[in-house]
Length: 83
Image (tube, rainbow, N blue to C red; front, side):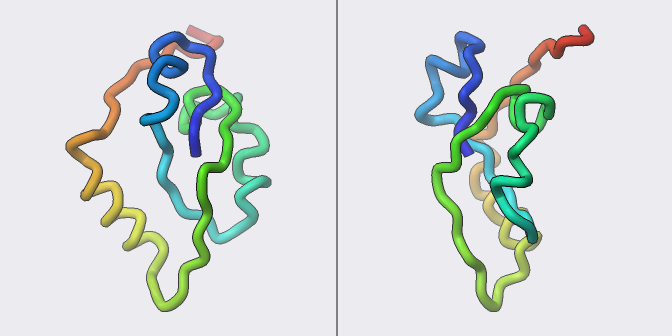
C-alpha cells in the first residue's frame, strides 16, 4: 500500500513509504476505512501490488518481510483527530 496522506513528510516521501501486510480476505474491503485507521497513517491508501500465495504461510512471510526491511522502517508519530 502507499499512503495518500497530505501530511507534508508523508506526501514528500510517498514514493518510498509503503505498508506491507497480509490478509486472508478482500484487500479492498480491508482498506475501505483506511483514513480512520492509524495502521494506514489515518489516510486513504492506494494498492501498489497484491500477490496470491501458494504453499507459503502468510504470517510467516509477512514477518520475514518486516525483518528484511527493519533497517528501513519508518518511525513516525502522527497526531490523530482526538489528540
